[in-house]
Length: 338
Image 1 (cartoon, rainbow, N blue to C red):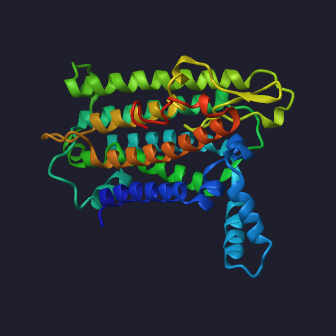
Image 2: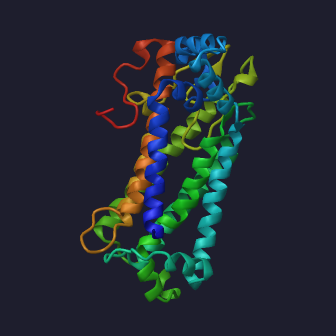
Image 3: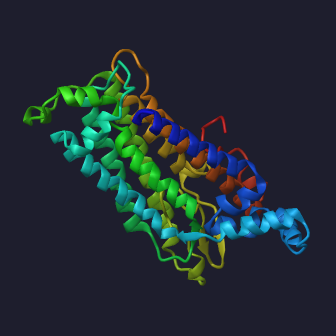
C-alpha cells in the first residue's frame, strides 16, 4: 500500500472512529465531552443508569460499563493541545528542508508513493500549500500560548493521539501529491519571485485569510471572556485547538457568547477551521482538471466530523444549561444546513 493511500485511509478511519464515538451514547458521554461540557447539563440520565448497572456485578452490562469507565479515566492534561501546533510547525520546517534539498526523508516518502496519480501538483502549488499550513500552525501555536489560562481540565488520551497523528500526516499531505513536480524541479531564488496567481489560487488564499481572521477573532473574544475575574477560578475553561470552551465563568455561572459571530452559530470558529482546510484542498488540487486534492479532502472530512461532533455536544450543553431558546435557530457547523 502506497503512502498516499495510507494517508487517505488514516484520515477516513479516524473520522469513522470519531463518528462511532459520537453516535453510541455510552461512548459519547465518556469519551467525547470534556471540560465544562462534562457537567450534568449534558444529560446525566444515561450516566445514572450506567452507575446502577455497575453496582450489579452479575450484570454483563455492568462489566462493560466498568471497562468503559476505566478507559475513560486514561486522560492527559487539556493543555497538551498546544503540542499539536508545535508538531505542525516542527514538521513544516522539517519538510521545507527536505523538499528544498530532496533529502532522505523526502526520498523515503517518494519511494513509497508508488500509486501517485498521473495528475500532479506543480512545484509552486507545493510551496503555497506548505506556506498556508505553516501559517495556520504558527498562528494556532501563538494563540494557544497567548490565550491559554491555567486549568485542571483533562481530555481522553485518544483525543491527543488522533490530534498528533493528524498534524503529522497533514505535514506530508500538503505536498505528497506533488512529488513528481518536486523531483523535476530545482528550487532557486527565482522561485521567490512574486507572480500573479491564477483564479483558483487567488480565491483559495483569500478564503484562507478571511477564515483565519474570523477564527482568530473568535478565539481572542473567548479568551477575553475567560480573563474576567471569577470567584471560582478552578472552573475557568482552557482555550485550545479548535475546541475552545464556548462559555465563560462569570459571577458563579456561565454565559453565552454574545459576539456577532455567535449570533447564528454555536461554534463559528469550528466553521472557520473547516473553511481553512477547504481552502487547502482547493489550492493543492492537482493540474489536469481536478477540483480538489483528494488527500487533503480526506483530511477535511476528519476535521469536519471531529469538530461537528464537538459542536453537537456543545449545543447539548448550552440547551441543558440555558434552555432551548439559547440554541434555537443556531447551526452547529454548516450554515443553513446543520
